[in-house]
Image (cartoon, rainbow, N blue to C red):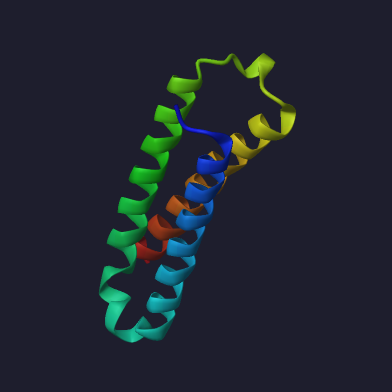
Length: 93
């Protein structure tokens, strides 16, 4: 069983990896430009899949979750949808 301490450590590690990745992307922005859209799409699929998996493993109805958790989940989905629309709009131009 995973403890809350282990979950926090994992979260901080993931956050650090994300910040590191952002730093690498900024450092090599010109060279990585062709990979921007594929990386965004893969990241969205992986993150979205993990969100769905997490919701399924929790097996807790939305009514029982704290409001901030439900709001965060919906905000995340809406932001990913907005990002996808932005990418599609720029590719269509």
